[in-house]
Image (cartoon, rainbow, N blue to C red):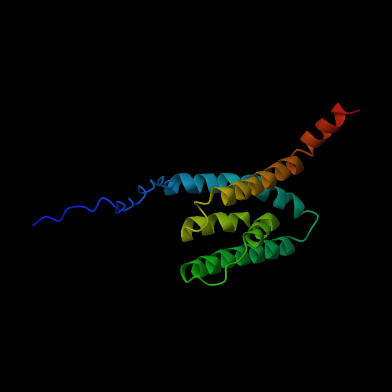
Length: 152
């Protein structure tokens, strides 16, 4: 015997449709973009090494990169176990302090913090700021000098 639906019962809620995820960039493209983003900062590091001991620069870059990757790794692990998370502001600070290349690698390898649009907006803004600053240093502050010239 087939059971008749009760008119007073609400129909079962339908689950939302599955979100379609964009496929990540293929490895050759991702590597090309990563290396392209490193061109200006490495150029600046080479120029800075004429004024600052290269060992200091290498040590700083290694430490900040290692810490940034470790923070991402720890946050990813804690996200899986519902543990205490590392604040996004801390991750962004690490990116800002020149850890963005390690953060980009961590996002790619760990698949962490890649889908939250507000996080990605700040992350890519930090990268753009670093690129702009590196461009300014390489071009002897061309944009800044041009803008100042407009107001004289």
